[in-house]
Length: 353
Image (cartoon, rainbow, N blue to C red; front, top):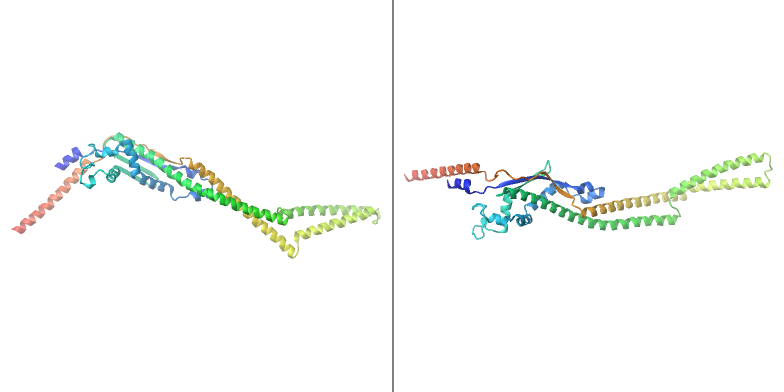
């Protein structure tokens, strides 16, 4: 009877307010380069953020913030809490003594967090003797949890930024070294690009062959009415010989024979390797610079937000305790105990008889 009276008239009635939120990560949308995706990859983002939120919201850090705003310490030792669940300054019962451990336990007993993986949403619930305060506490939890997420994200981005600055210097040195090797090769072989040299020579060869055909036509036409020993004809003959020699020399340089041909092929292969190395290092350096700029912007921004799916509301009626359920449970337990004691008593009496 006494327990029923306690449950009905003394046990603290608590009003629960709740909100459903989802983490919006803007840093993933800003990641433009493959290098950035590798550098900032940190597993399953939403579930990891939800786990961080779970740890932080249940922590003493969050309790201290809420205690300053809503005086939770005073609340847990006040008469708003029933005598059984209240904390006391001077008491020899360890679980009811006013200390930081028991305060945190009381806070967490009023707090409930549920993460739904399929929808990636986090449900935040808090129960308080005052329905309005319960709502405000949930709102405050969301606000401070957002700040915490961004602080962690900024610290993480700062670490990545410092690493990128070192990486940028390294890649710049590598790029300059490969460029220097290419310049040394060009100076050594007196060429900008062996392939371009071959193409240039092909153009000159075509021009000389066309000129040779034209000179031959002129020579043959003049030979019909002029003496081939005349100065003009001798000059034309010399021009033809000079053009033929030039064509032969260019063809020899382009095709080559023996060691010269091997040297030409080696030069082309070496140049392609050096050119490919420069292009590869240039692209890596470019990607590093892009990511450096991207992360520099992210360090100064709040890239994570808790989007409220359902806002916390003021409860119309108390959520805890479930008085009917508690009384029925108590009656059942007392009935079982009474039955056990009655059975034990009858067994003892039978043995005495």
